[in-house]
Every structure is written in C-alpha cells, then in structure tokens.
Amino acid sequence: MPGPKDLDPSSSPRALLGAELRHAREKKGLSQEALGLKLFVSGAFIGQLEAGTRRLRPDMAPLVDEALGTDGFFTRNCKASNKSRYPEHFAEAAEAEARATAIREYSSMLIPGLLQSPAYARAVCRAYQPTTPEQEIDKLVADRLARARILDDPTKPMLWAVIDEAALRRVTGNREVMAEALRHIAELARRSRVIVQVLPFDAGAHPGMQGCVKLMDFDDAPPQVYLEGIATGRLDDDYATVAQYRHYYELLTASALSPQKSLALIEAMAQDYVHEEHP
Image (cartoon, rainbow, N blue to C red; front, side, top):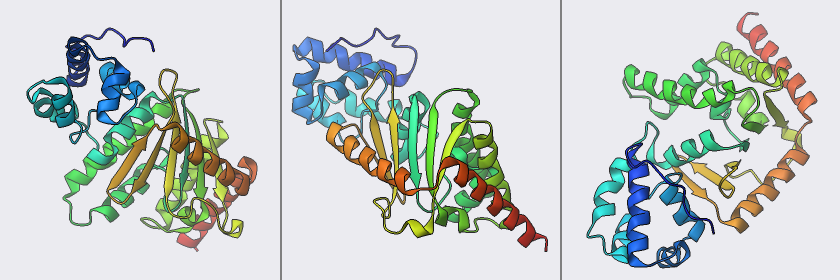
C-alpha cells in the first residue's frame, strides 16, 4: 500500500492528529495494516486517518492510545480534531460528500438535503426541533444550504437521486413551499446537473422501504455508504457492505420511473401544489 501523503500539520486539527498518528505508528514499528488489526479496522482506514480524510472516532481514540502507548494523547485531542458545523452523527458523511466524485442517494420520506430549497430545509429543521430558537434554525438551514454548494461545480460530483413518491406528496411547510421545492429539483434536472428518478407508489415493495442510503465514490479512497436514521448515522467502507447497498440501489433505479418521466411528474406535481394553493 502506498504511504500517506505528506501533510502540513498546521493546516487543520485533523491534519495534525493524522500526522501524529503516523509518527506514533512508525515509532512503534507498525504498518498501517498491523495497527488496523489491533483496532479492528482496515489498513486503508488507518491511511485515511493519517491523511486527514477520515475522522478518528471518540470511541476509537483510547484504543489507539493503548495500541501505540501514547498516554492519552489521541483521547485528549480527538474532540478538537472532530469539530464540525454538522451534528456528530453526520459530520464525517458531510465531509465525505464534499470530496466525492459521485453520489447516489435514495430518500424515502423527504427530499435529499443536497436538493432542498431554503424554505423546505427550514420546514424540515423546524419539524425536527420545534422548540429551538429561530436563530439556531437559521444556522441549521445555512449549514444545510452550504452543503449544496458542491453542486455549483458544473460537472462534479455526479449526483443521482432516487426519491420516493411519498417524499414528494408529503406537504412539508405548506403547498407553496412544496411547489418551490419541486421546481428547484426540476431546474437542477433540466440543466443536467443531477439525475433524479421518482420511485412511484405502484412500484410496490422494494429494498429501500426501511430507510435512506447514500453511496459515495472517490478518486483517492474506497467507496463508502452512509446509512441514516433519526439523529443517528453510520458511515461504512467495508467492501461487502458497500456492494450490498449498491445492489439495493440498482434495484431501486430499476423500479423507479425514468429520469424523463420523473421530471414530468415532478413538474406536474409542482403545478398541482400551485393550483391547490391558489384555487
């Protein structure tokens, strides 16, 4: 396996932690694979920690200290290196999203975050936290919209979203908000920035019925899958796990409407919301 890239330790707390991890590992005379065995992760994962592209989880830091004899250094510094604008369960996935060359996502009950309009994002954030002060909701919405700036690049990442019809039928905010949200998706699809398919109700049972899935590919790292629930999430780069969810995603795309029919349905639903709002 090629060695980790040289890092500027002053560039970020995570770069510093990665450089220290590499230094401590080499001082101990361990390869990335050998340290991975002690921590029950792959050597590739250790390489990503050292390169600063993956987060050292708080539950793993004490194991690193024990394996490398670093007297609590990684436990003490893990929190600072993991500081993020996003919730802890999603922070690493958001950073992976920003580095991905391709993102394939299935969403069952809401429009995917990267495709949300500002008003829709606000309605979702408010639904999750109904008693939160307005200024905190403003920050949550701003952070969510900041994620979507990766779509400002005209070519990458490639975003392919399969959205359950239920997410488009559920009135989130109000009908005007829904009309705007669907027009936003249609505009992105019209200018060929994203691929969107709708999984219709009449598709029947399918492998995504129990949740959402996000598959991400990278130029310099193994593919990853992110699985999310209510205030929880898991990022996994295990080859067999990623392959299984990729298979599920392919089944979903096969059951969904074509991109052309999906776009027509989305635009028709947007018009329906407008007419229902203003009879």
